[in-house]
Image (cartoon, rainbow, N blue to C red; front, side, top):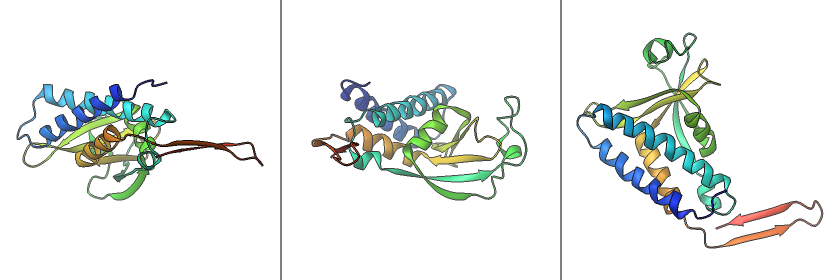
Length: 178
């Protein structure tokens, strides 16, 4: 359980700023690519932990969705070939999917494939990813703008109203965080 969310949200904002700078870079080094991995993995883990804490983010932030591109699998993916994205997935065609944040958190945290994507100008454009569950069905792509936006939304989210009530008929509790 997260006790004080400020110590989780402030680093999310720092990660968003760092990813913004890497987006504008013209040549990413190996060290910067490793930093991207750390920021994305730790950032999405932090988002998941904040979402799972009942009163640390608003319902509005919790209801945020992410737009992903989805590429179909062509042949089986293993730990020995998972880096050959162009051979394993149809990158020439993609479908768009809207997913909730926790879906994306789970896929990134438990990623089987994770590959940052560099733009034509050399800066960070986004990342390809999937998990061990869906590696043989599809590959997702998320833009770095979507990641930065999410980290800023959650990092700046400051609940100011918490209301809890119980349904007298069912006995179920209801929590509203605004």
